[in-house]
Amino acid sequence: MIRGVTAGIDGSPGSGVVAEWAALESLLHGVPLCLVHVHEGPHQGPHPAAADAVDASAVRHQAEELLADTARTLRRNHPALRVSTRLLLGRAATVLTGAAAGTDLLVLGSRGLSGTMGFLLGSVARETVSSAQTPVVLVRVTGQPAAPRQSAPDVPTRDVIVGLDIHHDCASLLDFGFAEAARRGDRLVALHGWSIPPVVRDAGALVAAQRDMGPSVARRLTRILAPWREKFPSVDVAELTPTGSPAHLLVRASDRADLVVVGRRVHPAAHGGHIGLVTHAVIHRSAAPVAVVAHR
Image (cartoon, rainbow, N blue to C red):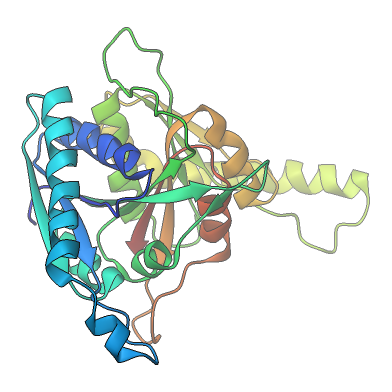
């Protein structure tokens, strides 16, 4: 594994927010930060002559200035930060995935929509999340300056929320989530939302099903978490097994979170990547940054 954090910046107004979040994460991890900008080259449309007229050297110079200015700002704000830059050519999602391979994580941005509609995940970020084996963190870009994120003892503890499906292997999510909570001094909230069987029709039967099935669900979550509680004894852990939509429960809990961790199951036989329904909903609605961790 190559220790480091990679951040993809594209020159949009939110690139500074993404870079700042990645810088703070690099300092928490104690690893270098690499800022990456990908130039996909001239558009090959129906008028190649127009594409050929693009001044490639000017485009490259602009990209280099973006990287240099961003790195300069981060060094000024965080003198202890080790930061480098890379200007790469190719298909953005493929290049970003390759550049971050084997590192601690890749940081990208998602843009805020108007009102309460949530966040928009661009095609590059969506494709990258769907294919990357490296954990990908999507940072909320709202047009407002990002609040400083600290881990000092006098900062009120917040949560790292990990959405778990107790019926599948959760090791990768728990490794990532517990390590992030330990670095921040945050509480880890392990949340498994579950549904009552559809045969339950009335309120009395619903209460009975919750009474009969709830303890078993809670015990299973406790057993799953036991090795990580032992590995990370300093992390305060809350175990939640409410009934309801997992996506809705995670989004509601994200209001008080530093980070929400969800999974993306890797299917070796499948062609292309896939983001599950719960992860898709959390990415678009969470109030906090979302880490998507690939797992079997």
